[in-house]
Image (tube, rainbow, N blue to C red; front, side):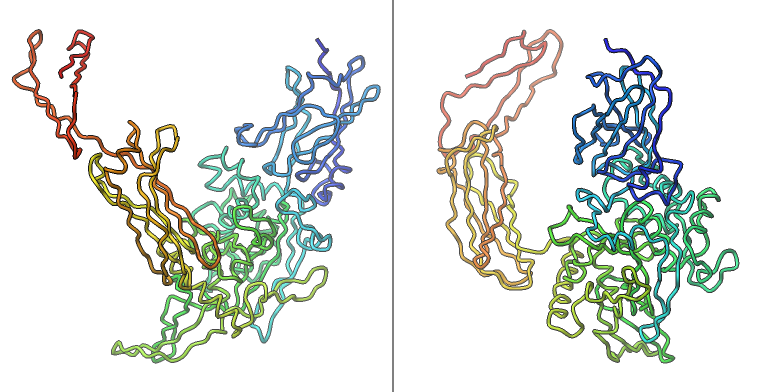
Length: 631
């Protein structure tokens, strides 16, 4: 057997590796690397020991309190000839007493603090490293192609936040400070304080491979509502027991205060402070991020995409809906494999606590393109952000006697001059066109109508598009004739010309298909927008009795074809026909050691006589281990 390698010391080459991985600003005295990119460390061996490039040299990289291969929080790999950039891998170069070991992580590995272990029967710890998202790696979902944008949205430690009103936009310089000493550890601590980690650490650490998940956790954890989050919001003008939101100029003092104070929420923040801290944490973890300001930002309290302003005679707004002069959130850059193609790129995420999403005060990530296109069913929280930039405003006056009069309204008041700092320049970039088509344009009204339509569907718990499903009745007993139904629904905004086919086929329990036993011809029909319809298929005993097996199973298949687009939609369902029940009636009182008489009855459900029938009775300790047969 090969002798165990004995190591005198290990050089993790902090400076060289961290320079390569764009993390040297973090630290020169610990190893901080990015996913899907190799790093090299040197093992100095004890005299007389050799590193055999053999089968017994294996490595383990693991993170989190319960590392496991299934959860991808533990990786086992051996030496190979070449580094793979699509999985964990390692190569080694040997000289007399040193081994130069190059390791590369999976581009989708969970981020966090890792232990690297040499496993040769006994485990030798080679050291710790922090693994971050990698906007420089094409396989990483946060990959950003432009070097200038990576400089701005990942590496830049200061920026500009826009406030004020559209006619007089003011600028607040802000220090993000994501590479300041200790800040990366605080950002990882925020993840470890989240309710997700506390309730299921193994699952949470595993999910940290996904920037959509991490962004959502940060959106919830930057505010303190419902968790041990970083900042308390306050819009009251009373800040005596804390710091006035306008006093803050950097994120680091807020993050350090939260961490040093045992994760007690820092008082106080408003939207731009929440957004700035979220930007710091995102950039620290390697997710490209920018701060965005929306002027005339609607807060739609009831989700109807209309801002209803009710005033009394004194011109005081008495409604729940409100329009903020400005509101600030962040955008994070990533792909969205959970959505259809075209919705990757900038995702709006809002850490200001004003909206519950899946029960938690967080918002996003919402694809900016989905907001522009009115795709309100896309995850996460698109309707809320859509209303912030595109709600229509209706104004009413409510008199003391209770009468209400409509005063006017606007389709252009909400969502103006949406702003972020330009790449590489201290100037404002207007990105309104990313969020909406030009006000008053045909496209803008078309998207508003679509959004309204999707919003009504979402509130009814329905999906857009054409839908077909099969409904059956409970009385499907073998021998009877019965109906099954294909229910159609048109959840689009136009009338659809459709063709429907509905048929039944015998099937056995192993999925083997038999003969057709019920066929509805192609039915042509027009389905009006948001209307439903129903197609009936009658299954007759005379037909299905010839096709079904002893399993009494029938497979139903319904097809709906959009005559214009040729798209087709399918529904299928397997039904089991109920057999007749045997009714058992015990006569007399059962006693041990005495004969027992039972009355058995069966009603024939078939429209034809049953012949050569047999009743068989089994019973442990009742029938001497043999069945009793009765013709």
